[in-house]
Length: 48
Image (cartoon, rainbow, N blue to C red):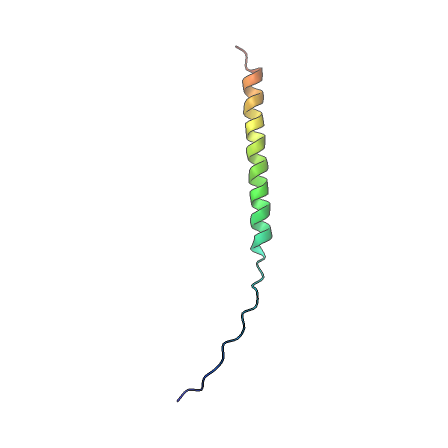
């Protein structure tokens, strides 16, 4: 008959990927803002 073992208390998992994901999202937002600014600049300076 197996002995009953108590489960170990779960420690809060350390997530090193959180920083990478946040940095990736921030870079994506900056790239999107830069792209929109470039499109606006292109439309304003486009020879009509």
